[in-house]
Length: 384
Ligand SMILES: *Cc1c(COP(=O)(O)O)cnc(C)c1O
Image (cartoon, rainbow, N blue to C red):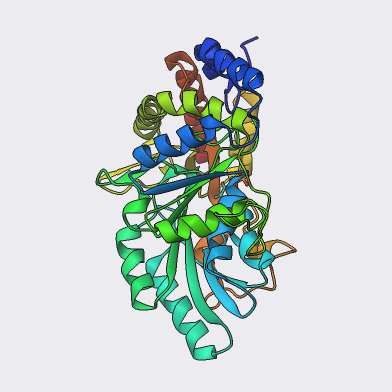
């Protein structure tokens, strides 16, 4: 029996930086500065350097990282925020939680990211209907791939909309060597353990070049406290702080993150070469570097069979996202652009993600590749 392959492997990284993390943890535990300790500020500074942005605010989750800027901009009932449906629930949830309306926009069939033409159409529809006020766009860097910000940003500017990069999966992804913050007003990320840059619990961060916005979010993060008098709460906020322990862990994880992105990229290149002509992987635009939160292919015929064949060969697969948000109970009454989200619906039927992480050795990659090639060949033979 061969060892079963894990879909994601957090243990190898843990072994690699065990001593450094354990020393960091001991130091935090001994210090007693469990809330907003010095590691939190240090991490925020390092993240600002890494992301090339003026201000970084760590927070309790990627979800908080999305809701903080929306709260700071006073997005509320009667406002429209344009979001993809082919994403994790949090992207739209934060909008609805504030009483505003998420308006679902379709994605491109090759990159799986927000379709700029469909966004234009959605904004036009909302404006013509005259019921909701368009306020912001949340583009998702799906599976680690930076969205087409150079095209999305001018559309947002033309209509006076704020642009958030939901980089929970794609934090560190670049286009022409620039991260999302080169275009977006705000970059939000998550440090959930399975994300490319994860901690050992929940965590997140929000980045911006707008220092005034950063100050408002800093206040919102701690119950709307005044920067001058912490016992005077000047607005309604949340308890959205990142634990010092998680910040300490992230300092060590961030140090090896660029190298980990390179490792994931090398694995993705091997996958791409192995599946050429057999299945279509997510398309990475010229000049883009993905963080490969997921490596995802389109199996246009017989996806269920593919999943079963892979399982038989000891290789786990996961379907992100089999039920897009506009098909989910809590979200199906929110507006969709045009007559529906045809590309999103189609993708939900054909995508499947393969094991991907920074510590996939060549032998395991070979096993996964052979299993996928055999599974795809079996499906093709049956169809012929
Ligand atoms: C994980 C994720 C989030 C939410 O992050 P949490 O830290 O789990 O709150 C938001 N958006 C996307 C696209 C995600 O993948």
